[in-house]
Length: 166
Image (cartoon, rainbow, N blue to C red; front, top):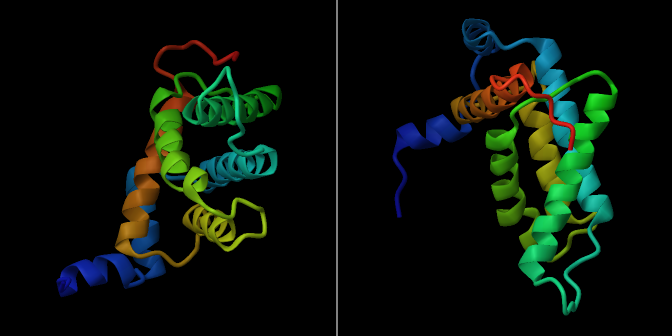
C-alpha cells in the first residue's frame, strides 16, 4: 500500500512556527485557552487511568456499561473540578462525545492500562504535545488541534447558557 507524498507531508512535516502562529491568530486561538483545555484533558486522562478498576464480573452491569459508567464519572468529576475553580462549561455534548469515542477506541482497548504502561504514556504524551501552544506540529496536528479546541471553546462559551452542574 503506497501513500501519496502529499499525505505523508500532511502527517509528518513540521510547520514553521510562524505558520502555526498565523493560523492560530486567524482562528482566535489563545495561549490561555490552549493551556486550560490541555489541563482539562490531562486531568481527565489521568483520572481515567488512575481510577479504572477493569471490567469485572457483574450481575448488574455489562462490561460496556461499566466502561460507560467509568467514563461518565471521570468526565463529570473533571468538569465539576473546573466548575469549582470558576471555569464553567455549559453545553459539553460534542466534546464529551468526542472524548468518549477516543477513550473507547484507545484507553479501554489497551491491554496494559497502567499509568506507566507504554500505550498510556504514549496517549498522555500525544495529548500533551497537541496542546502545547508553541510546540512542533504538522498540518495534521494543527487541524486536529483546531477541531478539538473549537469543541472546548464552544462548550466554554455555552450557547444554551446553562452551566453544567452534574
